[in-house]
Amino acid sequence: MYTLVCFCHLYSLVNHPSAQQGLTVFAFMEQSNKIVALKVLFKSQLKQSQVEHQLRREVEIQSHLRHANILRLYGYFYDQTRVYLILEYAAKGELYKELTRCKHFSERRSATYIASLARALIYLHGKHVIHRDIKPENLLIGAQGELKIADFGWSVHTFNRRRTMCGTLDYLPPEMVEKTEHDYHVDIWSLGILCYEFLYGVPPFEAKEHSETYRRIVKVDLKFPLKPFVSPAAKDLISQMLVKSSAHRLPLHKVLEHPWIVQNADPSGVYRG
Image (cartoon, rainbow, N blue to C red):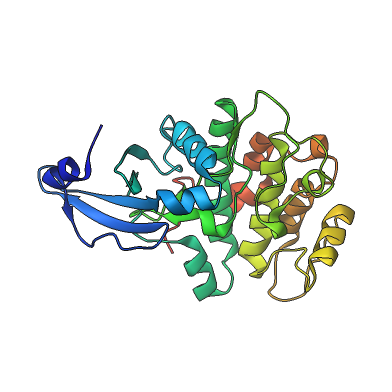
């Protein structure tokens, strides 16, 4: 296991940790010409927020994953006050910032990202892992423009069905809002929400009051605005993923076979602008 001193012998820190939770610093290894991200978490704040078990779960799950569209966790170390996660560096930063800047994405870009995420989720589900919190804030863009799932704080192994309320309100599926059992189908719902937000710039069930958002989710009150223009094929895919009965949501391998994905997604999995 690393220590901070040992790590700094191998890597040159580009910037240094300060007293805030979740700070990410970047480090450079001269021998391999490799940059990594060092996520710094303060033990006192983890304990105060009662998320220590969540961090252990995140490390346990993410450290064993190997996929082009999943951010690598290379290792971790800790000292008396902090925990350090050594993560793959995603050179082009946060998808959320890019979506905010663009307001919404083109169909080609959206389809490429959705196809990449569908492949990553097929891999995760094959490893008995449900992500449960797919959203723009948890996605990063790599050096080549490839999408990376970056946060596994809400992930769980699928050996048992779950009832826990988690994830982001706008992305919660009906079964989690109603606190009934849920399984890997929650990730298909989140992918449908994400596809909608990519194309329209807002999630489909957004409302001023939480209670109204809950109501719209449970009713699957899905509306497609006239602007920006979105093709009927894209709407069809979204409608097949955002189905209240989880067992009737379009399976991920069928998402990849959907005409809108086939016609619009870059086969390389990289959006090239």
